[in-house]
Length: 135
Image 1 (tube, rainbow, N blue to C red):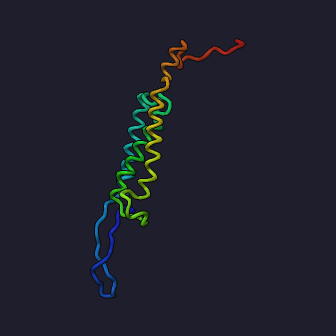
Image 2: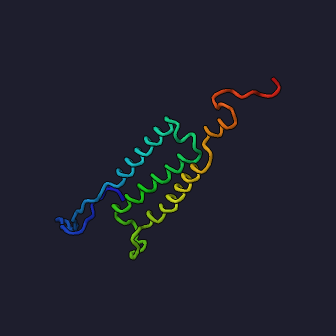
Image 3: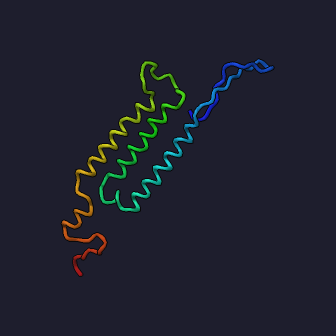
């Protein structure tokens, strides 16, 4: 997991065998992808794109995060021998349900009325204070 050097060939004077094989710094890749996802979600929130559709920001988050994790898993050294006959490792198998859940949230958000459409249909402005009974 992460940046590592695997040993396996050279012999030191004390008998230690070394042969370093460089690996991808996947922890940095994950951190950068999550930072980029946070910035994108923040910008969508600032532009009120995700605020008007319930579930859209959660769906984007799930799809983007677990797709990034799914792709980065191809670069990682297997942590455990899960199943040598499978093309995917455990992290990828565990990412698939969350990607599908995120897609379901996005579909749901576009099938339901947006908050701005429901506010305009009811004739109220969400920025104006509502009349309270008894005044």
